[in-house]
Amino acid sequence: GADDAGGIDLEAYADVWVFVEVHDGDVMAVSWELLEEGKKLTAKTGEDLVALVIGEDLDAVVREALERGADRVLVADDPVFEPYRADPYGAQFRAMVEERKPSIVLIGGTHTGRDFAGRVAVPTHAGLTADVTEIDVDDDGLLQARRPAFGGDILATILCEEHRPQMATVRPGVFEPGEPDLDGDFATVDEAITAVDVVVDESETISEVLERNVGDTTDITEADRIVAVGAGIEGDLEPAIDLAEALGAELVASRAAVDEGWVDGSRQVGQTGKTVRPELYVALGISGAIQHVEGMNKSGTVIAINTDPNAPIFEHADYGIVGDFADVCPRLAKSLRER
Ligand code: FAD
Image (cartoon, rainbow, N blue to C red; front, side, top):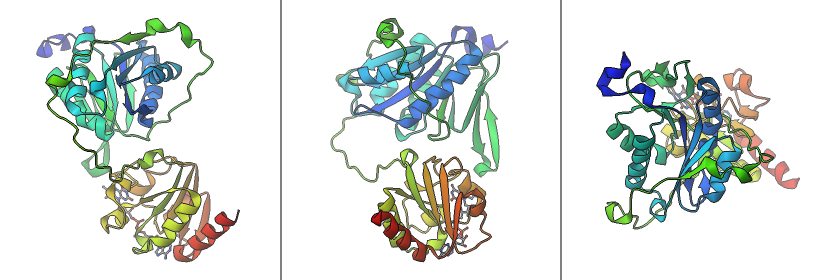
């Protein structure tokens, strides 16, 4: 049986953990997406859904995790965790995993999550699947982690049969975050909150934050409104920026536009970029290739502007305008500003 593989007693591991990522009191949206998805897993396995919160001054976050359906919250609250550094996070997380033995650990595939997940997975011999876009669990609690493979041509299901925990970093934006239950009686849940021992201190921490150079830190996965540009704009960003400003929208791009260097790679939408689900997505000069559409087809209202009436993007649009973006954008921006 699996029990003797590597000497790991699979039965000793239980529960689904979700890492709640906090920076300066702000929770990354992917954490709540994962908590919502975690509920579906524990509904099947009958285990507890545990939110794991690391940072400083976490009371409000802990409360929100309970409101959002965590059965229990583990809290490591200490100044050593703010601002984020990989070594204290990795050491703390690892100690918690080794002591408490979760069966499944879900971490948002953010810069932070991807940075420290390996520091937990390698020493604990966990199976770590990166960049997961679908998750499920079978009756035996075996995690089915699905992710694009071979350049996105297939979706691979990755199982971790002989090791625990089963860890995954999950792509932000692919799951719905759900709503907190504000009517629950959370005053009596002190027993649901465990302040864990903080196992790291500054003296053991080898990295130090000397300076923070904040470049483009916009997280397009959190934008409510988006203006997307494609190869069709031919480097003429101004009408798109003008429209984005009038809408209060973030600018993103297809891979073709990123490859041309018109827009930063952190703003690419699609299979090899990010998945976004804004209320409004305006596509300018984008043909609507499947690899692009995959990253935006969960958007609310989609408006496409394209000179080619047969462009596939129109099949995914609620409103289509056949025309030159350089013509249409200023008119839209103007009428928005006049409202
Ligand atoms: P094009 O397909 O060249 O379309 C340009 C459009 O602009 C045309 O429809 C044209 O009619 C229109 N146009 C031209 N002039 C104007 C004008 N003046 N006004 C209005 N419209 C105009 N792509 C992504 O976007 N994201 C990804 O993550 C991604 N990952 C990929 C992964 C793999 C494995 C592969 C194989 C491809 C991937 N691609 C991705 C590339 C994808 O297949 C397309 O090549 C790309 O999306 C095309 O970008 P586009 O729509 O901007 O350009």
